[in-house]
Image (tube, rainbow, N blue to C red; front, side, top):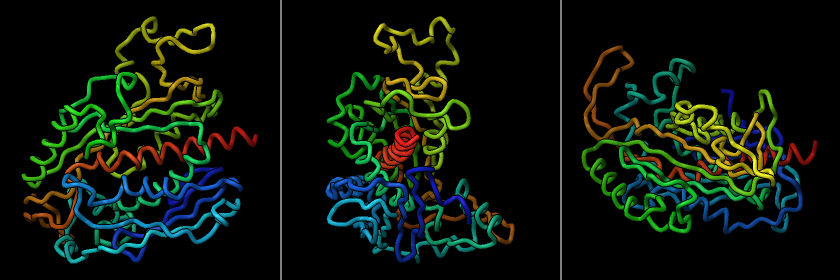
Length: 352
C-alpha cells in the first residue's frame, strides 16, 4: 500500500490499524534543538480522543503517546522522531456482522476490490482512528512554527450554521463546549441536534472553519506547489472530508472582479482579504482562512440496505461505537494537518 507519507521537508509517515496493537508514525525533517512541550502534545490528543463527551463515539482510549526516537533530554535531535499510540479498547466483535458485507459510502468495497483483502475491524487503515498519529505530528509542527497561530472551530452541523465571520468571534470560547463552536447559543443548538440524530441511530455532517494567523509573506510556489493546493490536499486526506473552500470560495464565483479584487493598502495589506491570505499560490501575509466540509459518518445504528460479497442486497443494522457527527473531534485534526503544511513550507522557504 502506497500513500502513507505526507510532506516533503517536514514529513510524516503513519502506520497501524484501528484494531491493531498500536498506531504510530515517523516524523522526518524536524529541526534539532526544539524544546518540546509534551503537555501541549497531550492536550491536542485529549481534544481528538474518543469518549470525551456524549456526542462522540464512546470508545475509551487514553491515546497516550510513547516516543521511541528523535528526542533527547526533552529536545529534538534532528533525527527521525518515532512514536506509537497503543490501542487499548478494541471491541472487534462489534464488526463481525460486516465481515461479508460492504457499508454504503464507506471504503469497505473499494478497499476490498483494490487490495483483495481488508481489515473489517473498524475499517483498518481507512478508520478515522488513523488521524491520531497526525495530531501527534501536528502538535510538534505547531512548535516548529511557534509564531504562526492556527485555530479551527465548528461553523456548521447539518443545517445549523454559524453566520459570523471569524473576526467577530471569541476564539477563547471554542473549547468551552462539546461541539467546539465559539458561539455558545449556536453550539447548544448544534449539540441538541447531534443528540437527536444519535437517538435516531443516524449521523449528520458539518463544516469546520480554520484560520491561520501571523503567516509570513512568501510561503508557497506559483505552479504545482501552491500553498492553498497543499492545504486542500491535506484537508481532503482527512476521513469524511468532501469539500475545501479557501477565502471567498464558491461565493466568490458569484462576484465581479471589481467586487472581489483585494485592493492593496500602502502597508501591503489588503482591504478585504477575499483571497484568503494566498495570491498566486503564495502567502501574502494576511490571515489564511478556509472551510472544510465533512459528510455524515457512513456507519448507521439503524437498518439500511447493504451489498454482500456474494452480490446480494440485505438489510443490516450497524453495530459498534461510532461518532454521530465527526466535526467536534475533527477540529484538532484540521489544525494538525494545517500545521504540517505550514511547517513544511516554512522550512522549505527558510532553507532554500
